[in-house]
Amino acid sequence: MAELQQEVDLVSTGFREARKIPRKRDTWEILFSGHEPMPPPHRPDPRSWSNDAVTAAWIGHATVLINFYGTMILTDPVFSTRAGLSIMGMFTLGTKRLVVPALTIDELPPIDLILISHAHMDHLDLHSLRKLDRNIPVIMAANTSDIIEGMRFTSVTEVDWSQRVEVAGLTIEGLRVKHFGWRYPWEKDRSRGNFDGRSFNAYLISKNGKHIVFGGDSAYQEHFKILADRGIEIELAMMAIGAYDPWIGVHATPEEAVAMANHMRAKTIMPIHWGTFILSDEPTKEPIERIKADLLHHSPSLALEMVGETWKMPRQ
Image (cartoon, rainbow, N blue to C red):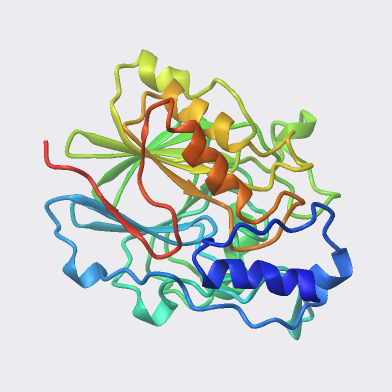
């Protein structure tokens, strides 16, 4: 357990230490570790956010809280201590958080929209969704809404690639990514050629002539170039930068995430999906180190580095 404790220590010190964790993680230790998640390095204060701007805070993993000109959005809400398979509702078999969410569910402001990119358990967490108001509209990828149909959310909309919907004063468009969608291995999945199988999205979010992208999960691909081709200016791209070793076929490296942000000509990139759960073999600190090094030579600008930090769109 000592090596996993080093992972937690790196989170608690804000990744200032230079130590590297051995690449091969022990599966038993990851699934059954008893370590205590550390407090978040920062805590956002959404009560202070203006409704006349675009503001976003990284809550942890792929969970981002966004105030888009007064419309409050929550992406891939995962607040549970572990991400994984619920065993008869008694416990969860899965990786344990290294850092506590930057806000608890009770500390969230009123939410106007929940965006869920795909059905994986570290993105679609039933335990967290059960604690959210059922009157909040939910947008999901195609062929995934059945997973939450028993929860009685009053508005659940599936959005397919290139499909647009109007909800909560926003325009939401599903964007194609390179990933996979099954929640359980036996399910139909678009990555296997089943177009009626579970899908997986990024989202273009638009309001007041401004646009941001929630990238979900994706390996390197060039589908985001369609946004630049359409002349859309992206203020912020929230891009996954972790879990690429050995899962490079479904997750991007930090450099590839930057390349995809540049495909859409994003002004700013927010690195997410790293440093919260151990899902792969790269050292915990490596993704943020690599993206910072890459951005020394490339645009876009870096929105933030640590859980709980907040980005605000510059005045234009």
